[in-house]
Length: 396
Ligand code: PSV
Ligand code: MN
Image (cartoon, rainbow, N blue to C red; front, side, top):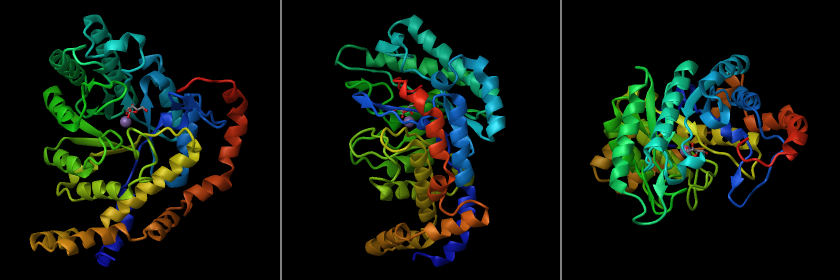
């Protein structure tokens, strides 16, 4: 095993690891072709908080729940007190606040990039309202996915839209409290298929710079073209001090939102390795690790617990890389040894270390098994089942 002297740090590594879970991960979802509704899916905010608190009780590392404004606070700031009450009751803090710039009929040609000034202002108002919600909830991060784009060459002015983007992000940034951040998430395509206004990390980084000092880039691991080197992007964002956080999921073809590490666990490991190679530990602690998933086939609760467990495993594996040895090998040009140094940490089976860590903290050694034994899924299926069968909506 690479640097077995590093194993004693495992507990500290795991103590420091937290991952935010998304409210929409507990709700019914699907593809544009159809949805397979789940009897136990959450359809109210209270159910999402209840599910999140169960995941936290089992894993001990998910104290925060990401909220999507339109789905979770349809009445904007006036819903904030209800959220705070649920947060208190379930012992789960509201996490990132996610404005919704993609569902209103008015956004057919875009939201903050819409050629119609009135629509742009409507979208900016929603962003400003989202910052107010975040302030009310004491949430640090307002996380923006700007879905704007166009489907046909010539149908929109890419240049005008850059200016509108800058204006909207600056206005939103101005509303932030001193300790709050704005995260800008990029995505190459979908829902637009010719151009997307914030298509890659370079555009997101440039916009973050223009927006203001509290803006950062959010890397959704599913938002890259095939075979793109995501850890290199992470290294660059760390270098320019603009890495704000992650939406973790895995992909095989496009933005598939599969379970993290289910297709390429080595890539997630390499991303964590780049993060842990950052010499400024303060920068590392500010990176928001978040899950972005909403499974159509897997059971919602099982999928969330499994994802959290996989993320912990890959993070711990990356912490085992003997970075000092690695850098010596790199300097000496010992290519195979350097690669083996990385690989041996990846191939270390860390599950018993995590089980021990959990046991010492009064957590079930295997959260997935504990979930099954708890009867929680059966209970919510029977409580929510009938009502859910009657529903056909997506993100209810
Ligand atoms: C868009 O694909 C995205 O990754 C954004 O983060 C949205 O908020 C989320 O998915 C919705 O599921
Ligand atoms: Mn995302």
